[in-house]
Image (spheres, rainbow, N blue to C red):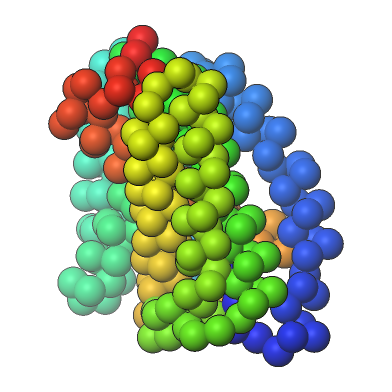
Length: 274
């Protein structure tokens, strides 16, 4: 979402970001295209890594507990039993709360972290596997989020300007936020033309996707600030950790699944009916 840093340092990690993106984007597209167990395994891997990152951030002393339950929850998604993933996640939450050392704030942190890092990738699987055209929905929304992130990076770091929410994420700028929204508007126009639906429908959707992705990013940034860390990890050069990379996409997938269930006609309005 942009950066409020000295001009000479604003693009210092661009090369690393491009290399990481060149590897991650094809892998993500392939996993979503295949869906089913392939995507479930990818989601389980992401959830496990994020669970480890959360344990490091929050000081949870038994990271493998969160890793195992987060991964198993995602692996239970293709079983066709809606209660199975919830049961695994609930069991993990109970177990984590029991073994967490310290007061209720530490136990609550462990439970929240497990739910948070699991819902982000699991929501993408649910979006892809929904009764609508899940493949198209997931691929479109992923492309919108990536366009939003890229536009925020280049406009925010190129233009600088007033900070967006300095207390939560001091490097985010209004120029980056507005650039992200503008990019998603253009994406909306393109997808509306592809799907042959009214432009306004996808333009509004594009704006909503960018806003939700940015809120997801800010939410994760706020969590890191409360634990006084800059990045969730170092596994992705130029980006930080997996949590730093999928926070916006996970938020978009989660909100999209809710919206599609609350407003059953919405997929048809977007040309995404199954």
